[in-house]
Length: 67
Image 1 (cartoon, rainbow, N blue to C red):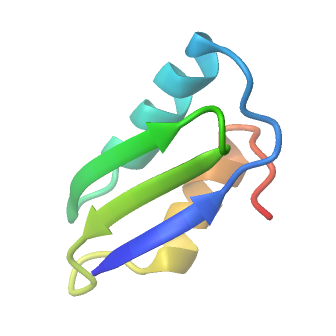
Image 2 (cartoon, rainbow, N blue to C red):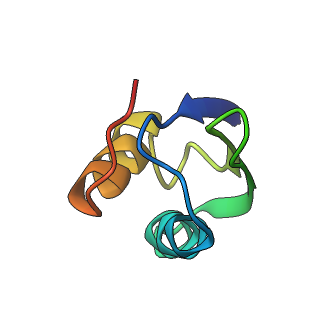
């Protein structure tokens, strides 16, 4: 499954590292591409192991606001 998540408070390279860590800590995540200019995260994952809601929750727990 492929999803694009928009995050409004992603501004620095530190944010990219934090987001990458928050996403990649979930079982079933295959790939994650972060675009800081458009503030979008493209995630490829196996929805057998994880759902989009769980990925959004991981980002929110890391302190990011998902639009």
